[in-house]
Image 1 (tube, rainbow, N blue to C red):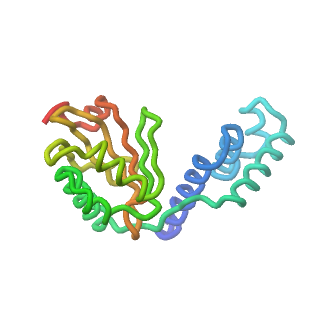
Image 2 (image 1 turned 180 degrees about the vertical axis):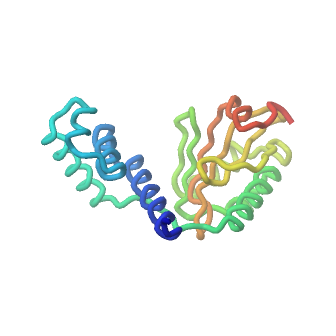
Length: 198
């Protein structure tokens, strides 16, 4: 029987590797890194799948490892489930009440906000807050958020003016909210099992 601590460590290693590759590596290096270092495929098998030579796969993996060594992945410390729920509850209250001051207390200094499918993104609390307060929050009651989770992270199903907007995904650390990813797609609301209007 496997040791539960070993299982957790293995999952955490996989999470770190995936975060690192998604953040830092170009496509081909990302694929090789995942197949070789995460899934532990032999170089010959990776070469066959990618239509390349074994030498090329090894070279690509070396470049990927070198790039990751220069820029370590942004991996956050673990936050207990109870703390995640509390942060999500405070975030929902701040957004629904259009309370910029409460939102400021939740965001880390280096927080990031990204909105998909738009190309909107902001980095740093000083840049995120004016955008959120002046362009997003509106007045109290503009937004209605319902708690959920996505990819093991706290999230909220968002309704704007009573109609489905999409999903807001939070990356929470002990120091506060590190990232808000807004996925503006009303179809996601139904996929998460929620109604299209409230």
